[in-house]
Length: 434
Image (spheres, rainbow, N blue to C red):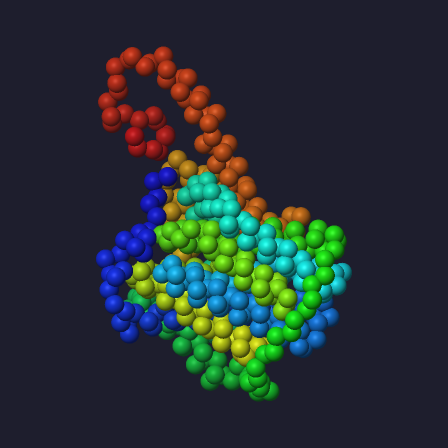
Protein backbone atom coordinates (compact mmCIF):
# COMPACT_ATOMS: atom_id res chain seq x y z
CA UNK A 1 0.00 0.00 0.00
CA UNK A 2 2.11 2.91 -1.24
CA UNK A 3 -0.50 5.60 -0.74
CA UNK A 4 0.44 7.41 2.42
CA UNK A 5 -2.36 8.80 4.56
CA UNK A 6 -2.67 12.47 5.33
CA UNK A 7 -0.68 13.58 8.37
CA UNK A 8 -2.43 13.16 11.66
CA UNK A 9 -3.43 16.33 13.47
CA UNK A 10 -0.97 15.63 16.25
CA UNK A 11 1.89 15.94 13.78
CA UNK A 12 1.03 19.47 12.81
CA UNK A 13 3.49 22.06 14.06
CA UNK A 14 0.68 24.41 15.01
CA UNK A 15 -1.29 21.82 16.97
CA UNK A 16 -0.32 23.46 20.28
CA UNK A 17 -0.59 27.06 19.07
CA UNK A 18 -3.35 29.18 20.60
CA UNK A 19 -6.59 29.57 18.66
CA UNK A 20 -7.13 32.76 16.73
CA UNK A 21 -10.36 34.28 15.46
CA UNK A 22 -9.22 33.52 11.92
CA UNK A 23 -9.16 29.82 12.83
CA UNK A 24 -12.90 29.77 13.53
CA UNK A 25 -14.58 30.89 10.31
CA UNK A 26 -13.94 27.90 8.07
CA UNK A 27 -14.53 25.13 10.65
CA UNK A 28 -17.74 26.80 11.87
CA UNK A 29 -19.06 27.15 8.32
CA UNK A 30 -18.10 23.53 7.59
CA UNK A 31 -20.03 22.44 10.69
CA UNK A 32 -23.03 24.53 9.61
CA UNK A 33 -23.00 23.06 6.09
CA UNK A 34 -22.79 19.56 7.56
CA UNK A 35 -25.88 20.23 9.69
CA UNK A 36 -27.80 21.86 6.83
CA UNK A 37 -27.03 18.94 4.51
CA UNK A 38 -28.12 16.44 7.16
CA UNK A 39 -31.44 18.12 7.93
CA UNK A 40 -32.17 19.24 4.40
CA UNK A 41 -31.09 16.04 2.74
CA UNK A 42 -32.09 13.10 4.94
CA UNK A 43 -34.20 14.21 7.89
CA UNK A 44 -37.35 13.92 5.82
CA UNK A 45 -36.96 10.15 6.35
CA UNK A 46 -37.57 10.63 10.07
CA UNK A 47 -40.82 12.48 9.37
CA UNK A 48 -41.85 9.79 6.88
CA UNK A 49 -41.16 7.04 9.43
CA UNK A 50 -43.08 8.95 12.11
CA UNK A 51 -46.05 9.26 9.76
CA UNK A 52 -45.95 5.54 8.95
CA UNK A 53 -45.88 4.73 12.68
CA UNK A 54 -48.91 6.96 13.24
CA UNK A 55 -47.09 9.26 15.65
CA UNK A 56 -48.71 12.55 16.55
CA UNK A 57 -47.05 15.96 16.63
CA UNK A 58 -45.81 15.58 20.21
CA UNK A 59 -44.11 12.21 19.67
CA UNK A 60 -42.65 13.42 16.36
CA UNK A 61 -41.24 16.55 18.03
CA UNK A 62 -39.82 14.33 20.79
CA UNK A 63 -38.10 12.19 18.15
CA UNK A 64 -36.55 15.34 16.63
CA UNK A 65 -35.51 16.58 20.08
CA UNK A 66 -33.94 13.31 21.21
CA UNK A 67 -31.97 12.57 18.07
CA UNK A 68 -30.78 16.17 17.63
CA UNK A 69 -29.72 16.66 21.26
CA UNK A 70 -28.08 13.23 21.35
CA UNK A 71 -26.16 13.83 18.13
CA UNK A 72 -25.10 17.31 19.26
CA UNK A 73 -23.90 16.32 22.73
CA UNK A 74 -22.00 13.20 21.64
CA UNK A 75 -20.34 14.96 18.69
CA UNK A 76 -19.36 17.94 20.81
CA UNK A 77 -18.03 15.72 23.62
CA UNK A 78 -16.03 13.43 21.32
CA UNK A 79 -14.55 16.32 19.32
CA UNK A 80 -13.52 18.15 22.49
CA UNK A 81 -11.95 15.07 24.09
CA UNK A 82 -10.07 13.88 21.00
CA UNK A 83 -9.32 17.28 19.40
CA UNK A 84 -10.42 15.71 16.13
CA UNK A 85 -13.54 16.46 14.04
CA UNK A 86 -15.79 13.64 15.29
CA UNK A 87 -19.05 14.41 13.50
CA UNK A 88 -22.03 12.40 14.72
CA UNK A 89 -25.41 12.03 13.05
CA UNK A 90 -28.54 9.94 13.13
CA UNK A 91 -28.46 6.71 11.19
CA UNK A 92 -29.83 7.63 7.77
CA UNK A 93 -30.05 4.06 6.38
CA UNK A 94 -31.78 3.03 9.61
CA UNK A 95 -34.32 5.84 9.20
CA UNK A 96 -34.98 4.65 5.65
CA UNK A 97 -35.42 1.11 6.98
CA UNK A 98 -37.89 2.30 9.63
CA UNK A 99 -40.12 3.89 6.99
CA UNK A 100 -41.23 0.35 6.19
CA UNK A 101 -40.45 -1.46 9.47
CA UNK A 102 -42.64 0.74 11.68
CA UNK A 103 -45.70 -0.01 9.58
CA UNK A 104 -46.06 -3.41 11.26
CA UNK A 105 -44.42 -2.79 14.65
CA UNK A 106 -46.09 -1.15 17.65
CA UNK A 107 -44.21 1.99 18.63
CA UNK A 108 -43.46 0.79 22.18
CA UNK A 109 -41.89 -2.39 20.77
CA UNK A 110 -39.89 -0.29 18.31
CA UNK A 111 -38.51 1.70 21.27
CA UNK A 112 -37.56 -1.58 22.93
CA UNK A 113 -35.76 -2.59 19.74
CA UNK A 114 -33.89 0.75 19.74
CA UNK A 115 -32.67 -0.02 23.26
CA UNK A 116 -31.45 -3.50 22.32
CA UNK A 117 -29.58 -2.19 19.27
CA UNK A 118 -27.97 0.61 21.29
CA UNK A 119 -26.89 -1.82 24.04
CA UNK A 120 -25.26 -4.00 21.38
CA UNK A 121 -23.20 -1.02 20.19
CA UNK A 122 -22.09 -0.27 23.75
CA UNK A 123 -20.92 -3.86 24.09
CA UNK A 124 -19.16 -3.68 20.71
CA UNK A 125 -17.33 -0.50 21.67
CA UNK A 126 -16.25 -1.81 25.07
CA UNK A 127 -15.05 -5.10 23.60
CA UNK A 128 -12.64 -3.38 21.19
CA UNK A 129 -13.58 -5.67 18.30
CA UNK A 130 -14.67 -2.89 15.97
CA UNK A 131 -11.20 -1.30 15.94
CA UNK A 132 -9.67 -4.65 15.03
CA UNK A 133 -12.01 -4.99 12.06
CA UNK A 134 -11.10 -1.50 10.81
CA UNK A 135 -7.38 -2.35 10.87
CA UNK A 136 -7.95 -5.34 8.58
CA UNK A 137 -9.25 -3.18 5.72
CA UNK A 138 -6.52 -2.40 3.12
CA UNK A 139 -6.00 1.36 2.56
CA UNK A 140 -6.78 1.14 -1.17
CA UNK A 141 -10.05 -0.67 -0.52
CA UNK A 142 -10.95 1.86 2.18
CA UNK A 143 -10.25 4.80 -0.12
CA UNK A 144 -12.17 3.18 -2.98
CA UNK A 145 -15.13 2.54 -0.70
CA UNK A 146 -15.21 6.15 0.45
CA UNK A 147 -14.93 7.49 -3.10
CA UNK A 148 -17.76 5.20 -4.24
CA UNK A 149 -20.02 6.25 -1.37
CA UNK A 150 -19.42 9.94 -2.08
CA UNK A 151 -19.63 9.68 -5.87
CA UNK A 152 -23.41 10.11 -5.95
CA UNK A 153 -23.07 13.38 -4.07
CA UNK A 154 -20.56 14.67 -6.60
CA UNK A 155 -22.82 13.64 -9.46
CA UNK A 156 -25.77 15.24 -7.68
CA UNK A 157 -23.97 18.59 -7.68
CA UNK A 158 -24.06 18.65 -11.49
CA UNK A 159 -27.33 16.77 -11.98
CA UNK A 160 -29.04 19.77 -10.41
CA UNK A 161 -28.34 21.72 -13.60
CA UNK A 162 -31.10 19.71 -15.31
CA UNK A 163 -33.58 20.51 -12.53
CA UNK A 164 -32.70 24.08 -11.62
CA UNK A 165 -30.11 25.34 -14.11
CA UNK A 166 -29.94 28.90 -12.80
CA UNK A 167 -29.33 27.99 -9.14
CA UNK A 168 -27.06 24.99 -9.75
CA UNK A 169 -25.17 26.75 -12.54
CA UNK A 170 -24.59 29.81 -10.35
CA UNK A 171 -23.18 27.70 -7.52
CA UNK A 172 -20.92 25.67 -9.81
CA UNK A 173 -19.52 28.70 -11.66
CA UNK A 174 -19.02 30.58 -8.39
CA UNK A 175 -17.24 27.58 -6.87
CA UNK A 176 -14.80 27.29 -9.79
CA UNK A 177 -14.06 31.03 -9.78
CA UNK A 178 -13.58 31.13 -6.03
CA UNK A 179 -11.31 28.08 -6.22
CA UNK A 180 -9.21 29.94 -8.77
CA UNK A 181 -8.83 33.17 -6.86
CA UNK A 182 -9.47 32.33 -3.18
CA UNK A 183 -9.67 28.59 -2.67
CA UNK A 184 -10.03 28.80 1.12
CA UNK A 185 -13.32 30.68 0.81
CA UNK A 186 -14.88 28.65 -2.00
CA UNK A 187 -17.38 26.69 0.10
CA UNK A 188 -18.12 29.65 2.36
CA UNK A 189 -18.69 31.81 -0.72
CA UNK A 190 -21.15 29.51 -2.44
CA UNK A 191 -23.11 29.05 0.80
CA UNK A 192 -23.53 32.81 1.26
CA UNK A 193 -24.15 33.42 -2.44
CA UNK A 194 -26.71 30.62 -2.66
CA UNK A 195 -28.63 31.83 0.40
CA UNK A 196 -28.66 35.41 -0.95
CA UNK A 197 -29.90 34.18 -4.33
CA UNK A 198 -32.72 32.16 -2.76
CA UNK A 199 -33.80 35.07 -0.57
CA UNK A 200 -33.81 37.47 -3.53
CA UNK A 201 -35.96 35.03 -5.49
CA UNK A 202 -38.19 34.52 -2.44
CA UNK A 203 -37.77 30.77 -2.74
CA UNK A 204 -37.35 30.12 0.97
CA UNK A 205 -40.82 30.23 2.48
CA UNK A 206 -40.55 30.79 6.23
CA UNK A 207 -44.07 32.07 6.72
CA UNK A 208 -46.10 30.15 9.21
CA UNK A 209 -43.09 29.07 11.24
CA UNK A 210 -43.30 29.62 14.98
CA UNK A 211 -40.37 29.42 17.37
CA UNK A 212 -41.32 27.04 20.15
CA UNK A 213 -39.44 24.74 22.50
CA UNK A 214 -39.66 20.99 22.01
CA UNK A 215 -41.03 18.85 24.82
CA UNK A 216 -39.56 15.34 25.15
CA UNK A 217 -42.11 12.57 25.64
CA UNK A 218 -41.10 9.37 27.43
CA UNK A 219 -42.36 6.10 25.94
CA UNK A 220 -42.11 2.97 28.07
CA UNK A 221 -40.37 0.29 25.99
CA UNK A 222 -41.91 -3.09 25.25
CA UNK A 223 -40.00 -6.14 24.10
CA UNK A 224 -40.99 -8.91 21.72
CA UNK A 225 -39.24 -11.55 19.64
CA UNK A 226 -40.76 -10.09 16.49
CA UNK A 227 -39.33 -6.61 17.20
CA UNK A 228 -35.97 -8.14 18.11
CA UNK A 229 -35.66 -9.97 14.78
CA UNK A 230 -37.46 -7.52 12.49
CA UNK A 231 -36.27 -4.21 13.97
CA UNK A 232 -33.38 -4.50 16.45
CA UNK A 233 -31.16 -6.88 14.47
CA UNK A 234 -31.54 -5.12 11.08
CA UNK A 235 -31.16 -1.74 12.81
CA UNK A 236 -27.86 -2.87 14.34
CA UNK A 237 -26.46 -4.33 11.10
CA UNK A 238 -27.58 -1.44 8.92
CA UNK A 239 -26.12 1.17 11.27
CA UNK A 240 -22.87 -0.77 11.70
CA UNK A 241 -22.21 -1.33 8.01
CA UNK A 242 -23.87 1.77 6.58
CA UNK A 243 -22.69 4.38 9.11
CA UNK A 244 -19.95 3.32 11.52
CA UNK A 245 -17.63 1.61 9.05
CA UNK A 246 -17.68 4.30 6.32
CA UNK A 247 -17.66 6.98 9.01
CA UNK A 248 -14.41 5.66 10.48
CA UNK A 249 -12.97 5.34 6.99
CA UNK A 250 -13.67 9.04 6.44
CA UNK A 251 -11.62 9.88 9.54
CA UNK A 252 -8.80 7.53 8.56
CA UNK A 253 -8.71 8.88 5.00
CA UNK A 254 -7.99 12.38 6.30
CA UNK A 255 -5.30 11.19 8.70
CA UNK A 256 -7.17 11.19 12.01
CA UNK A 257 -6.25 8.34 14.33
CA UNK A 258 -8.85 8.36 17.12
CA UNK A 259 -9.83 4.85 18.10
CA UNK A 260 -13.26 3.69 17.05
CA UNK A 261 -13.91 2.08 20.43
CA UNK A 262 -14.76 5.24 22.43
CA UNK A 263 -16.78 6.60 19.50
CA UNK A 264 -18.91 3.46 19.28
CA UNK A 265 -19.24 3.33 23.07
CA UNK A 266 -20.22 6.98 23.57
CA UNK A 267 -22.70 7.09 20.68
CA UNK A 268 -24.12 3.75 21.81
CA UNK A 269 -24.63 5.08 25.33
CA UNK A 270 -26.23 8.22 23.94
CA UNK A 271 -28.59 6.17 21.81
CA UNK A 272 -29.44 4.06 24.85
CA UNK A 273 -30.37 7.13 26.90
CA UNK A 274 -32.36 8.83 24.15
CA UNK A 275 -34.21 5.77 22.81
CA UNK A 276 -37.20 6.09 25.21
CA UNK A 277 -37.77 9.60 23.84
CA UNK A 278 -37.89 8.39 20.24
CA UNK A 279 -34.30 8.42 18.96
CA UNK A 280 -33.79 5.41 16.71
CA UNK A 281 -29.97 5.48 16.56
CA UNK A 282 -27.12 7.90 16.17
CA UNK A 283 -23.52 7.23 15.31
CA UNK A 284 -20.45 8.69 13.68
CA UNK A 285 -21.41 10.46 10.46
CA UNK A 286 -20.21 9.18 7.11
CA UNK A 287 -21.11 11.52 4.24
CA UNK A 288 -21.43 14.82 6.10
CA UNK A 289 -18.34 14.08 8.18
CA UNK A 290 -16.20 14.46 5.07
CA UNK A 291 -17.26 18.11 4.87
CA UNK A 292 -15.59 18.73 8.25
CA UNK A 293 -12.56 16.42 8.10
CA UNK A 294 -10.96 17.66 4.86
CA UNK A 295 -9.02 20.74 3.83
CA UNK A 296 -12.19 22.71 3.17
CA UNK A 297 -12.75 22.88 6.93
CA UNK A 298 -9.25 24.20 7.64
CA UNK A 299 -5.81 23.96 6.03
CA UNK A 300 -4.40 22.88 9.38
CA UNK A 301 -5.75 19.45 10.43
CA UNK A 302 -5.21 20.34 14.09
CA UNK A 303 -7.89 23.04 13.79
CA UNK A 304 -10.61 20.91 12.18
CA UNK A 305 -11.92 19.68 15.52
CA UNK A 306 -13.59 23.09 15.82
CA UNK A 307 -15.97 21.96 13.06
CA UNK A 308 -17.07 19.09 15.32
CA UNK A 309 -17.78 21.50 18.17
CA UNK A 310 -19.69 23.86 15.86
CA UNK A 311 -21.78 21.05 14.37
CA UNK A 312 -22.61 19.78 17.86
CA UNK A 313 -23.79 23.23 18.96
CA UNK A 314 -25.94 23.66 15.85
CA UNK A 315 -27.53 20.25 16.42
CA UNK A 316 -28.32 21.13 20.03
CA UNK A 317 -29.84 24.43 18.91
CA UNK A 318 -32.10 22.63 16.46
CA UNK A 319 -33.03 20.07 19.10
CA UNK A 320 -34.01 22.69 21.67
CA UNK A 321 -36.48 24.22 19.25
CA UNK A 322 -37.62 20.87 17.90
CA UNK A 323 -39.21 20.81 14.47
CA UNK A 324 -39.14 24.60 14.08
CA UNK A 325 -35.52 24.98 13.03
CA UNK A 326 -35.54 21.58 11.33
CA UNK A 327 -38.33 22.93 9.13
CA UNK A 328 -36.13 25.92 8.27
CA UNK A 329 -33.41 23.64 6.96
CA UNK A 330 -35.96 21.57 5.07
CA UNK A 331 -37.38 24.73 3.47
CA UNK A 332 -34.30 25.02 1.25
CA UNK A 333 -34.80 23.69 -2.31
CA UNK A 334 -33.40 20.20 -2.75
CA UNK A 335 -31.20 21.39 -5.61
CA UNK A 336 -29.47 23.83 -3.26
CA UNK A 337 -28.77 21.08 -0.73
CA UNK A 338 -27.48 18.52 -3.25
CA UNK A 339 -25.33 21.02 -5.15
CA UNK A 340 -23.87 22.48 -1.97
CA UNK A 341 -23.06 19.04 -0.57
CA UNK A 342 -21.53 17.78 -3.82
CA UNK A 343 -19.29 20.80 -4.29
CA UNK A 344 -18.19 20.73 -0.65
CA UNK A 345 -17.17 17.07 -1.09
CA UNK A 346 -15.26 17.43 -4.38
CA UNK A 347 -11.89 17.64 -2.63
CA UNK A 348 -12.60 14.53 -0.57
CA UNK A 349 -13.79 12.58 -3.62
CA UNK A 350 -10.68 13.52 -5.57
CA UNK A 351 -8.35 12.70 -2.69
CA UNK A 352 -10.03 9.33 -2.12
CA UNK A 353 -9.76 8.39 -5.79
CA UNK A 354 -6.11 9.41 -5.86
CA UNK A 355 -5.36 7.27 -2.79
CA UNK A 356 -7.35 4.32 -4.14
CA UNK A 357 -5.51 4.27 -7.48
CA UNK A 358 -2.05 5.33 -6.32
CA UNK A 359 -0.67 1.82 -5.80
CA UNK A 360 -0.56 -0.07 -9.11
CA UNK A 361 -0.44 -3.43 -7.31
CA UNK A 362 -3.79 -2.98 -5.59
CA UNK A 363 -5.38 -0.62 -8.12
CA UNK A 364 -7.78 -3.18 -9.61
CA UNK A 365 -9.18 -4.29 -6.25
CA UNK A 366 -9.58 -0.65 -5.22
CA UNK A 367 -11.33 0.15 -8.50
CA UNK A 368 -13.71 -2.79 -8.01
CA UNK A 369 -14.49 -1.51 -4.52
CA UNK A 370 -15.14 1.98 -5.86
CA UNK A 371 -17.53 0.77 -8.59
CA UNK A 372 -19.35 -1.65 -6.28
CA UNK A 373 -19.88 1.05 -3.66
CA UNK A 374 -20.97 3.57 -6.30
CA UNK A 375 -23.53 1.06 -7.60
CA UNK A 376 -25.28 1.27 -4.20
CA UNK A 377 -26.33 -2.38 -4.20
CA UNK A 378 -29.40 -3.08 -2.06
CA UNK A 379 -29.80 -6.69 -0.90
CA UNK A 380 -31.62 -8.25 2.08
CA UNK A 381 -32.26 -4.82 3.55
CA UNK A 382 -28.57 -3.87 3.76
CA UNK A 383 -27.24 -0.88 1.88
CA UNK A 384 -24.53 -0.29 -0.67
CA UNK A 385 -21.68 0.61 1.71
CA UNK A 386 -21.69 -2.90 3.17
CA UNK A 387 -21.83 -4.68 -0.19
CA UNK A 388 -19.18 -2.42 -1.67
CA UNK A 389 -16.88 -3.31 1.22
CA UNK A 390 -17.62 -7.05 0.95
CA UNK A 391 -17.02 -7.13 -2.81
CA UNK A 392 -13.86 -5.07 -2.48
CA UNK A 393 -12.42 -7.27 0.27
CA UNK A 394 -13.22 -10.42 -1.71
CA UNK A 395 -11.55 -8.99 -4.81
CA UNK A 396 -8.51 -7.96 -2.77
CA UNK A 397 -8.29 -11.43 -1.16
CA UNK A 398 -8.49 -13.21 -4.52
CA UNK A 399 -6.02 -10.89 -6.24
CA UNK A 400 -3.56 -10.50 -3.37
CA UNK A 401 -4.26 -13.37 -0.98
CA UNK A 402 -1.83 -15.96 0.30
CA UNK A 403 -2.31 -18.46 -2.52
CA UNK A 404 -0.80 -16.24 -5.27
CA UNK A 405 2.13 -15.32 -2.99
CA UNK A 406 2.86 -19.01 -2.23
CA UNK A 407 2.80 -19.81 -5.93
CA UNK A 408 5.26 -17.02 -6.61
CA UNK A 409 7.54 -18.25 -3.82
CA UNK A 410 7.60 -21.78 -5.32
CA UNK A 411 8.42 -20.38 -8.76
CA UNK A 412 11.49 -18.46 -7.62
CA UNK A 413 12.82 -21.01 -5.14
CA UNK A 414 15.04 -22.93 -7.68
CA UNK A 415 16.84 -19.66 -8.44
CA UNK A 416 17.65 -19.02 -4.78
CA UNK A 417 21.40 -19.45 -5.33
CA UNK A 418 21.47 -17.89 -8.80
CA UNK A 419 23.24 -14.57 -9.29
CA UNK A 420 21.05 -11.60 -8.49
CA UNK A 421 19.53 -9.67 -11.38
CA UNK A 422 20.33 -6.02 -11.83
CA UNK A 423 17.99 -3.82 -9.82
CA UNK A 424 16.77 -2.04 -12.93
CA UNK A 425 15.29 -5.18 -14.50
CA UNK A 426 11.56 -5.74 -14.03
CA UNK A 427 9.09 -8.11 -15.61
CA UNK A 428 7.53 -6.85 -18.85
CA UNK A 429 4.18 -5.20 -18.50
CA UNK A 430 4.20 -5.39 -14.74
CA UNK A 431 3.88 -1.66 -14.36
CA UNK A 432 5.40 -1.93 -10.89
CA UNK A 433 8.84 -0.59 -10.08
CA UNK A 434 11.02 -2.88 -7.93
